[in-house]
Amino acid sequence: MKKEKRDQILEAALELLAAQGFRGTSTAEIARHAGVATGTLFHHFKTKEELINTLYLKIKTNMAESLLLPSPGVSGMRDELHNIWHNYVSWALERRQEYRFMKHCEASPYISGVLRKECEVKFLPLWELFEQAIADGVIKELPLELLMNMLAGTMDGFLRYLIAYPEAVNDKELWEKAYLAAWDTIR
Amino acid sequence: MKKEKRDQILEAALELLAAQGFRGTSTAEIARHAGVATGTLFHHFKTKEELINTLYLKIKTNMAESLLLPSPGVSGMRDELHNIWHNYVSWALERRQEYRFMKHCEASPYISGVLRKECEVKFLPLWELFEQAIADGVIKELPLELLMNMLAGTMDGFLRYLIAYPEAVNDKELWEKAYLAAWDTIR
DNA sequence: CAGTAGACTGACTAAACAGTCGGTTTTGGA
DNA sequence: TCCAAAACCGACTGTTTAGTCAGTCTACTG
View 1: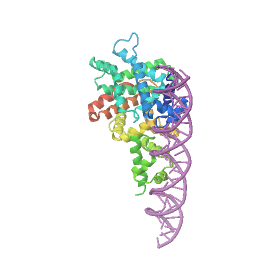
View 2 (view 1 turned 60 degrees about the horizontal axis):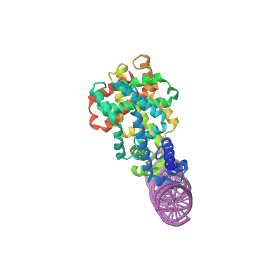
View 3 (view 1 turned 45 degrees about the horizontal axis):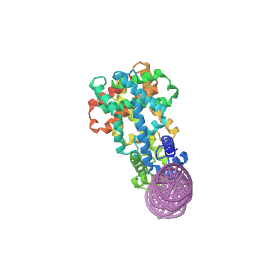
View 4 (view 1 turned 30 degrees about the horizontal axis):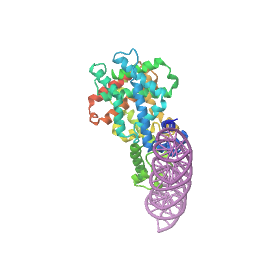
């Protein structure tokens, strides 16, 4: 019963902000949805921006952890990247609210540049993996960030498709084919 | 001097909405920026939504035209897709405000579902081209929409990179390599 | 039990918002 | 030159917003 209200606020905020966007959701609505007075919301978070940034940090951290979760029996660059691809797509499908929320964050002035920079660190192992892959000649010799952006683009494209055609979510053969297409992009 | 004010409003609206988002830009600010009274804005556009939808239609139409612009000496599926890829990236770079505006539209409730559907027609030739390409075995045998989404993802990834590293915009060799990577995704 | 620090409350405020309206100016045809 | 219609104006309205504050409740300490 200690930090219950604070968590309720974060939960309600995620739900509403993911669905309606940042500017489309009022603090009053979040408080009401959390079963809490507006004063309580502003007791735990000085401003709406602080609330959103708190969520951003929490979700980004969770995403990085899920993304880099090792899988037993994975060896070699190709498997490693397959694992990461699988982890990301699974994470986005299991946590759609979080995925939607992060999409809202991408271009939002609510997320401070400082926080964005701070979060980059969490993906350092990913960067190192890519650097190694280029050095080994396993993937194309293109700027690291370009490869990352294009790969992220294919993943988001696949996710957009899965969300539009939910019956495809369990089609493991399609997953494999989509991964191979993404792999072709960078290898 | 006929429709000057209306155009000024559309111009100012594009500039501000692209930069600040839909909810972050007030009608009063748009009117002020256009050098026009708020009453004038609402004389030309019944609501803020109508203004945004008018812009959406205008820009989407222009984008489709640019995208499908034929290039002399283009023959074969590979060249055709190369041309489209080049057209899209060039369009987005030359019309960054329009590109940003369209990104805001993607998940916005301001754009009516009806209008979205109406605009799909403009991209019919693109769909037919892809269908033909699959039938000819030139590109992977995957659902059309999946291929489109993944290809669009690589393009947006490339654009994100170019916007982050503007010095790369004129590196034609990089453009070619990026295109080949995108082509590898679907072929 | 008394004292107190932090959690919690909701009515309130000042600013910002989309949209209105009564009136003025501009335009173009007769 | 006159007239009607359309363009234009900006002060105004009712609503919604993030954030405040004076005070109440709760849980723990000595």
